Amino acid sequence: MSVYEWSIGTRYLRSTHRRGFVSFVAVMSVCGLMLGVATLIVVLSVMNGFERELRSRMLAVTAHATLSGLSGSLTDWQALQSQVRRQAHVQAAVPYVESQAMFANGTRMAGASVRGVLPEEERTATGLAQRVESGSLADLTPGGYGVILGSALAHELNVRRGDSVVLIAPEGTATPTGVVPRMRRFRVAGTFHSGMYEFDRGLALVHMADAARLFRLGSDITGLRLAFDEPLRAHTLVQQVAAALGGPGFYVSDWTEDHANFFRSIEITKSMMFMILLMLVAVAAFNIVATLVMIVKEKQTDIAILRTLGASPRSVLLTFAVQGVLIGLAGTVAGAALGTLLATNLETLVGALEHLLGTQFLDARVYYMSDLPAYVEVGDVLRVGAVAFLLCVLATIYPAWRAARTAPAEALRHE
Image 1 (cartoon, rainbow, N blue to C red):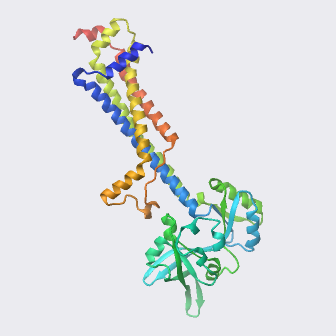
Image 2 (image 1 turned 30 degrees about the vertical axis):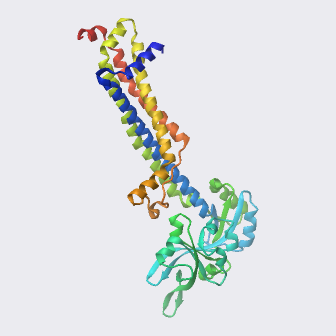
Image 3 (image 1 turned 45 degrees about the vertical axis):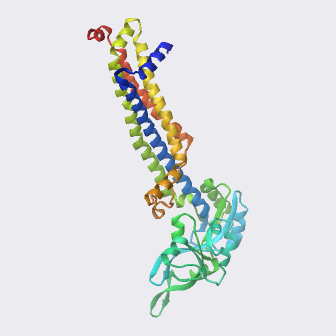
């Protein structure tokens, strides 16, 4: 490309003919492309932030993996625990007893998972010990029948620390009059708030000895909850641990399996949103076609003069291709900058908007969080920018080709 092709192409974009109509249309094309690119980056950043926040909150309150017996319980778990702790990458291995149960407080009833833990060991496995709002795990003592409820569960039962609730086990006791549910009154020793509604509404902690007695496990446990130094490799590491233990076999699961539907739905939604919003970018990009067609129509005489002076069809094509490329480049760069700026400050902007409107956009009971996190990934910005710019380049082909085919005599005949 020579200097005069670049000079003429940029000059046409700054045209003041017809009161600057061509320049105005070019600016509108840039603005449309900028908004399309920015919208796509913001939406992808929100999906990234949602996935990142969900993953970090899950890893903070749940075990990285669990190891349990094929029959549903583990015997001689102390020896097994010692073996597991000696395995590579294992930071903690704590026993637990878990089952579903019903809580009752007067006429209020709610189902939840009851997890029996050893308070002194639980602190090494998850972050729930640091998220107890009132009381502490140390308040759970064997035979004390204390319970620490999730904050949403305590709110639903309308109880607070010091109150009592009735725990109803799913297995009943056979009596001459029939099967009677096993019930036990527990004292609310505190509440915890994990920031994830799934746990705050559906989990209660009791001492492992009380849980084993209530669910009639004796000295057995449900399994071991493991913490690894590389949580993202939990799926592979827990299988390696189980294989190293040998024995009759174990049932293993990890946090990626337990919450696979969440992350799968996020990935599917992210892909669908990219394709849908890419249509907006495509519409904005192909507005360049209309802009360049109008420029070609207005500059018919100039094109004819250039051809008469010796300009080749290739030079004319490059002259108008420059305009489309510059519009696409300006819109893409401006959109990437605007999208990154909005995504970086999105949480603050949404918070201010919620305060202004007096509403809440995210319900924690549905989305597992009440704020709107956003995380800008450089790869997404580059991908969106590359696709948008490619669409703009494709949009310039037809108008530039049409300009190159202009016949000088035919164009000058009507002047």
